[in-house]
Amino acid sequence: MNLKAKILLLAILPLLAAATIITLKSLNHSRDLADQVLAVYESNLIEAKMVALQEQMDLADSAIAYIMSDASLSDEERQEAVKAMLSRLSFGEDGYFFSYTQEGVNLVHPMIPEFVGENLYNFQDRTGNFLIQHLIAVANEGGGFHRYVWERPPLMEQEDKLGYAKLIEPWDWMYGTGLYLDSITEEVAAVKASFDDNIRESVITLTVVILGTVLLIVLLGLAINLHEYRQADTRLQKLVQRFLRLQVNERRKLSRELHDGINQQLVSLKYRIELAEKKLGDRAVDHPAHKDLDIASTVLNQTIQEVRQISHSLRPVLLDDLGLKAALRALAEHFEEHTLVQVTLDYGLERLDVPDDIETTLYRITQECLNNIEKHAQASCVKISVRYEMGRIVFEVRDNGVGFNPRQASHHGIGLVNMRERVEVIGGSLSMQSSPGDGTTISAALPYKKRLRKPKKAA
Image 1 (cartoon, one colour):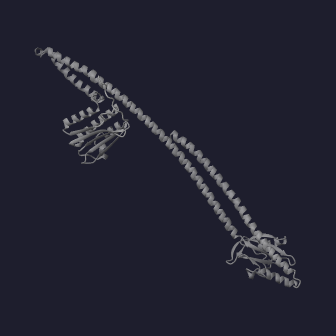
Image 2 (cartoon, rainbow, N blue to C red; image 1 turned 45 degrees about the vertical axis):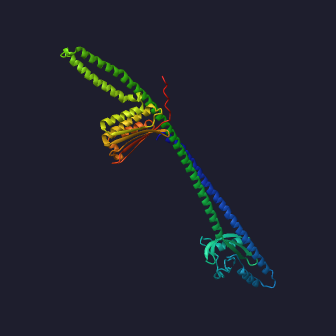
């Protein structure tokens, strides 16, 4: 792992850790707060039920007091009248009244008449709650509430119920009523579900924000890294181009020294040898020096050719003496002479000042293309085109030969890799189009800032 990746990781990991801790803390706090709110909400709903129960008990107390104040009735008749009145009283959809003796004998139960006369003192709901005993106990204490489970009409399904009980003083009867709490349970469940949804949405939003932030950091890191890479690549390319220009200049200087210096001296030496042979003349044909001079002349001719070849390989002299167009024309004419293939040159850079590195690259890839055509193309005509287009020099060599499969080009030794490297080292690009039977086209695009050639001053 490189240094940049480690720095990026050190930036992301603390952020993720802090975000995770904050998220968990916020989640726990939100849940605690939601539980507190739900508890308060449920308490308020239950208090509302209590108020409603007390109001119903107050109405029943008024009715009982009215019966108790009727002096025309005997005590037994008042008891029967109170039972009848409690049996008839109802409110809401399922509100009713009940009554029990201190021993737990049921006196009034309009929903389950079978309970009347039964002793339910030890009756338990499904939770094990002795509800009749507790109701009697709170009634004896002056009245109060008790929560239990009871069947709810009309389906008689067991539901949570809040009951309120008090005493009818003259007879110590416990009587009361109750309200089912399923509506409260449903409302609390709905509110809890809403809280859970909000918490879940908050967590999802926070997670998305965190992931988005991490992604942004990663993208910024990649962008910075890519920018630095491009800058480094640009600097490296400029350095390579500068080195290439220096190399071209050194090659030109060395080539010129070989051509104008050493080569001229070798030619002068050749003339001296020839002059010495003439001075010896035919009379001294058997002289031992003749043989040595012939050998020296042969070796000297070979040396002159090698020096010329080395000079040409370093930097074609024609480029310096006559320019790119003449050098390309010379290549084309030489190619026509020994291959009998017609070559057409379309040169459109006469008025432009082309840098040495571009001239050298164009010359060398032209050489490589012509060599490949001679070896593989079996062409009858070749067209070379060099022109300027929109900030670049476009080079193209097209032949009408047999063509080939570009995917197998690397296996046929046509030097495409070398040409591509030459072009790319000065910031250009090389492409190739070919197919069996349709010839081949080699194209190169070299970046070039247009500069007009300065006119030569008259002598």
